[in-house]
Image (tube, rainbow, N blue to C red; front, side):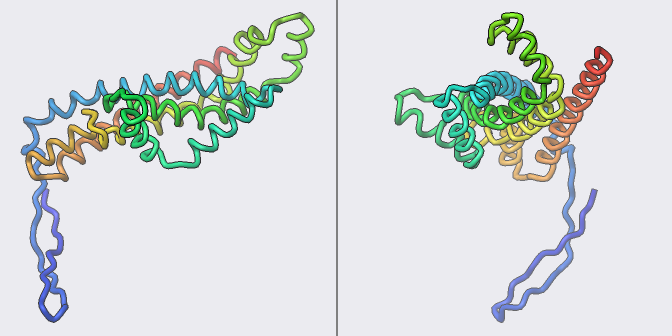
Length: 241
């Protein structure tokens, strides 16, 4: 594949002359590095899954805090959400990765710092989604459960949350997809995920188009696979209704 582009020649007078030249994209040059890049897929998936599980669990707890009548818990959840939604994700990652050794003496790996950062950040966003799902459940079901003497934790676990999660499944899937794509940020702290491995190959071969385009294709396939799985799961849940 040949792409014609412009090479700019600068002259002392300040004028720029455009001259045509050729740039060849040859994926055969990275064929021996493809297995190395693909080894980043399990790391990226593990990072995304673990972060999502911790994030959704913590987000569920935060959502319960937000609808609680206990003011300190509600204030804590609101302030927490405000902080993590109001600051850049990459800044949060840098603080956790670089500041944790200074504050605690413990040096996290890139994977550990990434999981902690993305779980805490994802919880802030998913808590609002889950809160909305909880509030959308018919209030009469809560009143009926309370009339029957069902305790609040049991009511939330067995009656309210299952219905809420069914209603907000598409939103949670979108959050998972965003988490999978944003996971590329852990490459900035040295984790050997898919993105980082593509960068390593690019630096080793002194070429960037081929390895990064290949990485983009792999990310696209994973995201489309997750979207297809979510659509099938949503259809099955609708049938169960």
